[in-house]
Image 1 (spheres, rainbow, N blue to C red):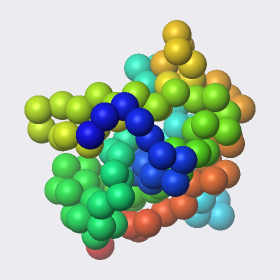
Image 2: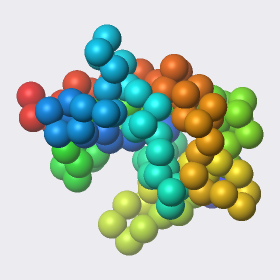
Image 3: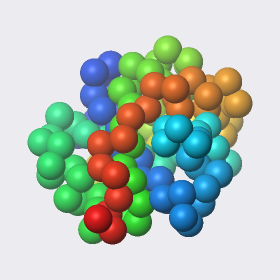
Image 4: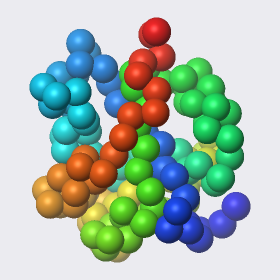
Length: 126
């Protein structure tokens, strides 16, 4: 893998369920923009065109909550930067940053991504 993210590559994020962090969810069940706020950069797993079941299985072993996804192209649309930052335990780890010099996504960037995100796995507890 490298730093190139195709526009149609999926990015996956685990989000705490409403019973743990209600601020991450709207009343209509969609993820809120608060789920996209992290001052250190938004942690995601890159899909790298793997089978979705494999991605979900891997993430549910490591995280609690729902798995949501967006396209890398959604990030490009708002000039957000995707950084490929693999760790020893996760070769797919990446981060979404608001700009080259600011890891936190701006409020408009967070809102845009929340509007385009969809839930692919309701809860690891189910």
